[in-house]
Amino acid sequence: MTSNITPAISVLIPIYNVEKYLKECLDSLLSQTFGNFEAICLNDGSTDSSSAIAHEYAAADARFRVVDKQNSGYGATMNVGLDEARGTYIAVLESDDFFYPNALEILHSAAEPFDAQAVKGNFTFYWTQGQRDELHRMVEPDMCGHVVDTREDMRIFFQKASIWSGLYRRDFLLENNIRFLETPGASYQDSSFAFKIWAAAERAVFMEDPIVHYRQDNESSSVNSKGKVFCVCEEYAEINRWLDTRDDGAYARSLRHMAHVSQYNAYLWNLDRLAPEFKLEFLRRMGDEFRSYEASGLLDWNDWSAWRALNLKSLMEDPERYIRVRERSCDDGAAKKALFALRLGGPKALAQAIAGRGKN
Image 1: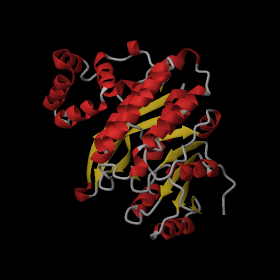
Image 2: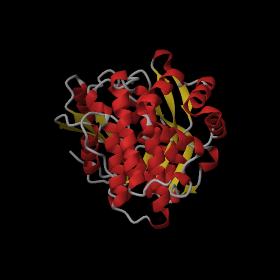
Image 3: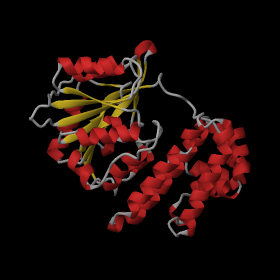
Image 4: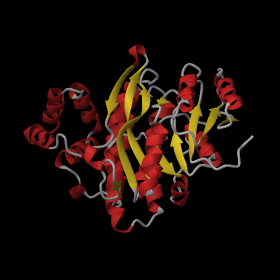
């Protein structure tokens, strides 16, 4: 039975075949120091015992409820959660991750005094073996503890999307038509959702505290399915469609540029995860999309750093050569990255890459 009392926070928990991790996830909600929440367990057609586990928690605690649905993918499932939510704020907890005990208290205590539309904390990378945690800083310390207009201080856009260490006012999401793209599967569907939040937020608050243990042992390191290769492209098509519907005034140009830079970063990160047989096709698609921005007058090369511009122009002009050079030279080492720049564009490119190191 659903309570008539409006909870402060609705926690959306998308669930699909996670019986191995789900109890630890839901137990982390039971142990929260902040108790005024509802936990909406969104079972997306699991074929293991995940649904039964979620129903056990719902039977024992009225704050938990389960929505069982046919499998339709992450985006559609999360939109069901948004429609079901009754709280003033929305939080997201992935079912293979788990909250720190004071996570909701930290987020809510930051949101209320600042009338924040969005609050974002850090998180830790977590490995089950050895129960190892490593802090990942999403935001710089100078951004924390006060209101930030993310349309002006845009550093958050350079981070990978991570909607699960934050809190978002439900009315803010509704007013700005911020929902998930309903593509099949569970690849990249938080990308457009996260971008829209930071593109619309006048009052965001960032916190240094870690909020979530983000599990690393349940991740795939590459994309081997043809059906998932271009999911990230659909996310950025949705971002551009959403920007087309808005009148962002003085921020419109910078938000459009930030969408393109975010797309550039996400596509190159995706490129390195793809199975080899998909890389060239994906890179050609990337080149086509950026050429379309250039042709429509939406891409101004003056807004781009010299190194990013060279990198992007090189892949647009000759994707086959770009792939060859990248595969020969590019990994996580600084020396290899320097070699990549040198091979791509000679000494001038190397100087640009060095000059751009550490810059957004």
